Amino acid sequence: MSLPTKKVQDIINKHSKLEKDLSENKIDSKLFAEKSKEYSDLNEIIKFAMEYLNFEKNKLDLDKIVNDKHNEEEIKNLAKIEIEELVSKHKENESKLKIFLLPKDEADSKNAILEIRAGTGGLEASLFASDLFKMYERVCNKKKWDLEIISLSKSDAGGLKEVIASIKGKNIYSVLKYESGVHRVQRVPDTETQGRVHTSAATVAVLPEAEEIDVKIEEKDLRIDVFRSSGPGGQSVNTTDSAVRITHLPSGIVVSQQDEKSQIRNREKALKILRSRLYEYERKKIDDERSKARKNKIGSGDRSERIRTYNFPQGRVTDHRINLTLHKLEEFMQGEIFDEVIENLNLRAQEDQLENIN
Image (cartoon, rainbow, N blue to C red; front, side, top):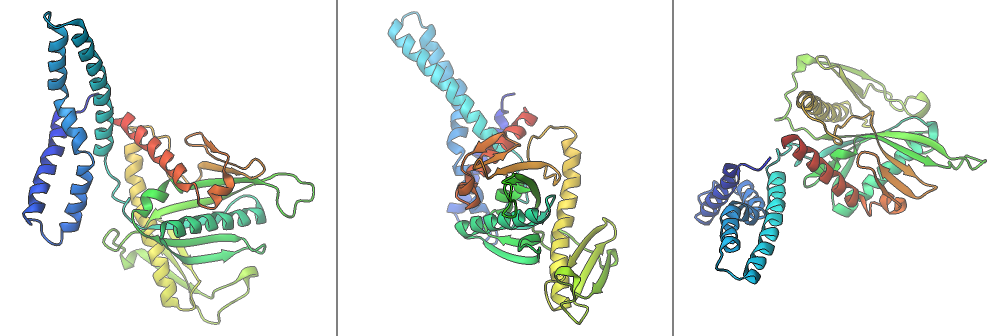
């Protein structure tokens, strides 16, 4: 289905108006950064929009040259070549404009809450959960993102049963949102004497970090329980009831926090996680309704979906959603080629969306 001319004209009109308003300082100072960003985004697409609208006129001019009996064959052949190039360019422009016009995810610009939990596989799963967290730490360091651990629970083997962290920077959620799901590892554990490959897993959840303005939590909807913090093996690590468990009664979502010695700090951290889980809970309800009418291959965010396998004996990482296999596992775990996988996932997500609007 071709792109409606009106939509393309709207892009050009919006660009012209913003250009005029910015040059004449007609933009409210509070909105200046937002409008400047919008103008910058339009600048990247305006050339394709102009070419798209001029396509019919340019093609008509070339058709006239081809159909003119008085023109020499050489001139006509050159015009035919130009028409082929023009049609090819028109299709490219249409694809770029469709991607630009795809609905934007309002959460893409938000910070993120990263949750990693050891899954099936016992102690080996907790060691893999730790390796995954280190990988995300390296990605954050390379991108100069700020990572702050909210809560962390270690296993007896020195791995991680669970870790929850806040990641802050530019457009964090847009980069990490496709990491949600089951990550499977295949490798020979250090404790394995027969050299057999074991399979274990860890679950990753990435939530957009919600602000108070995004989610309003009513005190009457909460049940707050306090208890004593416990360490590995269940021994008490605090003599006061500093740990906090918050239950959101309408949704049934439960968040526990015990890393801080202060009950107030644990409550603050628990509410921060709860707010993000509620925000994602509401987003998912809306998205599920939309999904009934469309078929998406990736980006479902289903935490039970196996999304990636890390095979250490073969040195490969495979993303099952896009059938992408890279024999660069070590580089991936070091955060070196993380962007390559994310770019491929984004490309497929765009293709899925374009299929749904065509």
